[in-house]
Length: 152
Image (cartoon, rainbow, N blue to C red; front, top):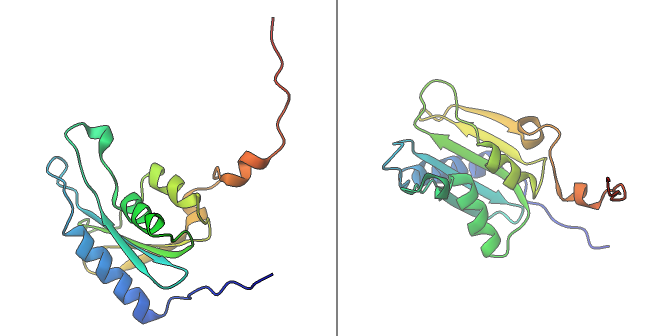
């Protein structure tokens, strides 16, 4: 079995990741909420994919920054991620990923490092599994299931 080499982020990598998240935030299209979000996703090969939120007048069609970054990475053939940095304009505390984004990220790795960053570049780090306990993952689809009984 071939051993997979995984890029372990250095402090310089994290600085670049945070910078890319902040830059992405400034590209956000959010005319309705005025709530800018940027994300930068680091792959296990060391590449960074950024994303911003893109709102829509039909609100359910809005796309979050985290999902934008994941879609960009996957569309380029990357499916192994080590770290994501997420930033917004919230000055006190941090903004975490919404539930849908947590679920999208869980599809790939519950051990993903999630850095929440504020405009002052202060950060807090979580493992994704902390943000989404009892996650539903692809493994759940492989679990044995009860037979379907017809109820009269």
